[in-house]
Length: 292
Image (cartoon, rainbow, N blue to C red; front, side, top):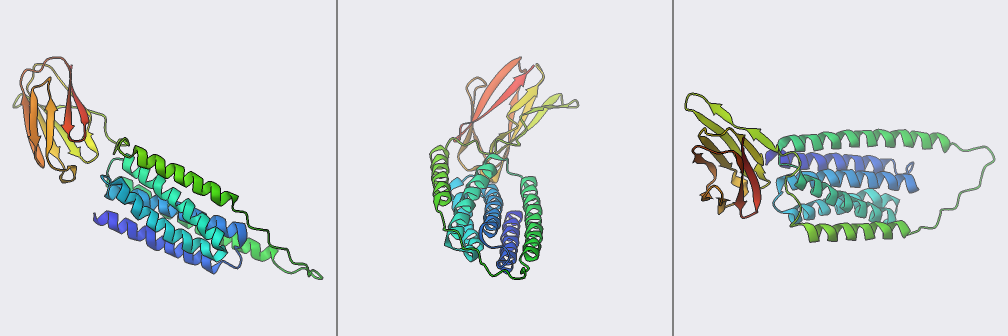
């Protein structure tokens, strides 16, 4: 949890710094270019914030989206406001899209400190490059802005068009409704989970030992391979975040047992070749034992 909180703080602070840097350059980065930088900052920062939030609250996708969307609204409005109200609205919309995309990816990835560290690293690198791009662009604008002798004509500002804003809003609504309707069908922690393992043989006790993890992401690994005719010791470790009232069920193995937090040991004698399916309820998480 400390890593999650620290990551969110880092994202918020560095986003604030880049927004401040953009605000300082507002006289040089006007119009389309300023709005583009504001939207880039809002999208990437909100996506990173959403991904980390999803890793912290993976069992509650709506809470993760609410937190990330709030961050997107604040960061998007502040970054886009110096370039006008339309820029602020566009930045908020694109930030909310980034927040939902980040949450969706974070939910689908297995809960891991490596995921959070990778997200932080990519975020920091992108924000650093964005800052350097703003610096380069402001220097370029400054050189072009040097007055030409005898030139007194000023360019007229272009009329604002809200077509892009309407399109962004429509995409956001469709994306948001899609996530809301499919939230119960999104595979939590499906990306990054090991799919199979081979049981370790304890020669001294003539046992095959396999450790299986159960957390809010499901069962990991989903399949365990055993040898036939040698006793099996399956240790099902239930993480504290997996919830309560869990049961391991397998009609084919004759198992219908409650799972407690920590290690739950199951012994199976003289296994025969075949594939044996089991589930963890509630949740409908499925796993298999393969004897071959």
